Image 1 (cartoon, rainbow, N blue to C red):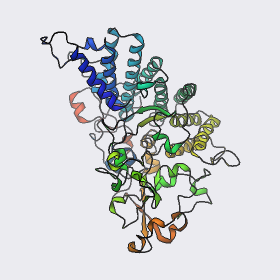
Image 2 (cartoon, one colour; image 1 turned 60 degrees about the horizontal axis):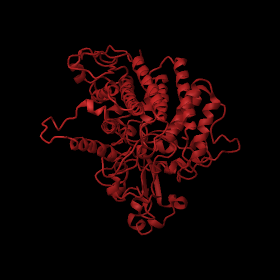
Image 3 (tube, helix red, strand yellow; image 1 turned 90 degrees about the horizontal axis):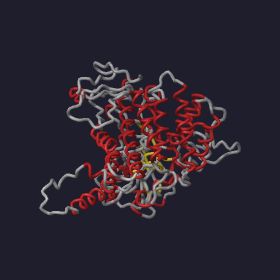
Image 4 (cartoon, rainbow, N blue to C red; image 1 turned 180 degrees about the vertical axis):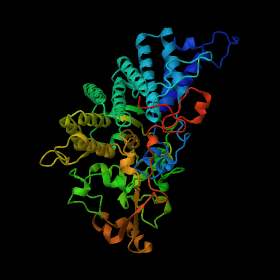
Length: 562
């Protein structure tokens, strides 16, 4: 649902209630609503859930933090330098969980019709599952609080086992799927659906099966994850979800068939600044410098025939953008490419050394994904582009990874080929879209992870994939992320009058030299093994003496693998 509709719904219901007072001399507290009235009034109860959605639905990565904590973009601070402390990661949304528990405990006491109750409960169960999932993938087991606590309760709760938290998340999602419709229509379009519950369940069980939580590689977890994602895909197909035909425009076609879980926006309400921070400052305001692709990210995209650049005879190291996977052009902005921001016809994005500093990038590249070229700088700061938390492509990738793990390589290949076909990669004589044939086991899993890296680039997924597969140490430790320095072969004064006439596809090497350089100049990437489960911050342990610290941190005794 659109954010402004959420806010308006809350305000209007309060006004309606105040306006219905029978006696103006009635001196009861006009600033509060009797909870009993909420669960007897459809508008008030719906407004309550609207506020839950506003407070708890996932949002754009407003500062580019997720990309910076991976190999997509520079950044990551202490996380990438091995400098985290017990207090570095503070995510403790129990105030929001309490608000959800209030509804789940009290709504059945009201007189709403059963369909309304079910749909409000279903949405709330998914939100609670989301919050606990975010907690468990950071810390492992956390206290499971499923009813609103009272001051007279024993508040010194213990951490539940990780397995218990995952079990509760799955239960909430299973219960929600039984209560919700496959789709909403009209003004309710965009609300949480049964499709979202089932797709999220597939994601959750994929995490539980992954090495972060499953170092012994217990096969039953992979089977459960495979079954959940297989069921999610079947349900989605039955209800007309699928891959949107055009990868480059799926972010700008609201509520297309690929959208499963979404947060929608309106310019006049709370907005996101992701687009403003991702654009160059010359076409933005107040924000810039986020999500700038590393050279490693740029090189990850295969060629138009699906073959990696390392194995392709067609790869041109100077004009590296030619004949690439079409997702490259929809994701990466490079020196001299046509990028008609702010509706400026013929505008090219130059990033070479000496160009207007507002157009320079810390890596030599900008991210193009989900950037609406029609937005002016002012509108970029108030972007209405919806955040798609789960889309159909992710479900296919989740299923492909699980299929590879349970020994069903043909199914994994089917999903990978579907994504590459949609992307516009050519099928080739073998109709394999450039995929290496005969892969299985770990090799096929790696192929799926590389496809995830490309398909879901800058969608706040790579960081979590590296954590759940425990790949930071093997892939990134001791390495550096890189950039490109583009320098002119002629003077800036000579280039200025001709730069918009230069065809870079033909003569880039005539005018430019590209030189790689590190963006991790002060310290190579250092990821400590205890980061796979963060520490519980001191302030929460000071409030509750029964909260054990996680093993691997100071005084840690809690085992997150149980």
